[in-house]
Image (cartoon, rainbow, N blue to C red; front, top):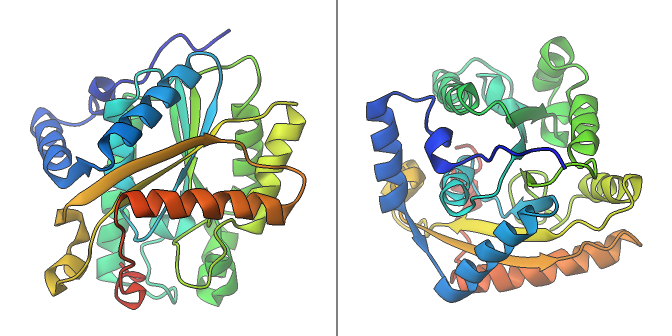
Length: 282
């Protein structure tokens, strides 16, 4: 087996300046609490055991633009046996324009902050790969679609090829982290995106293996105006659920599995859905 080097919390922060490292660790330690402690600790231990002999898929219950950050840093602290990570992200984060594709100072700052973060993580962790993915949102918005065609043509195909190669059987300790909804868990969206189901089925049948799947969430109660203005300064409850297998014999059965585990995960954090109309543009 390959992949002897492990990604640790220390080298996860190594690309940042000393002051920034301290600030990130301080922020993470004060913004995240572990919920359902015994269950979550047991699940994280199970992920670590799995990573010693195989690769795993972690689904993230995604509710606002940057809630993945406290979840990812918590996983980086808790998991010792990761040899490589693949993290797809919405291509809109790279564009620096608003949701209509128009120039926006706020979104330009958001893009620069995101690129600064991923660039410094990758600087000392070349086995952490961030790949842009164009969703229906970008493809169905004319100005955003034009940017995708101009600057990100072929991004989805590149991601799918990387995903398949990532889970080659000769590797162990590899983690892919993505949202089962292929974006925000907005009301009315399916708990499992049909295209994501197809890609998970493709990976498992391509390599004739059954991946262990896990669910994690970093939930925050957004009640006050300040919380909605700056959710990353609000306490998050981190919880984990799994392992489970994702059926490849039909989309409906796979969706039912995700729905059952999502319900358990959210209940363990006493999650209260936010006002999505106020955070969908964050």
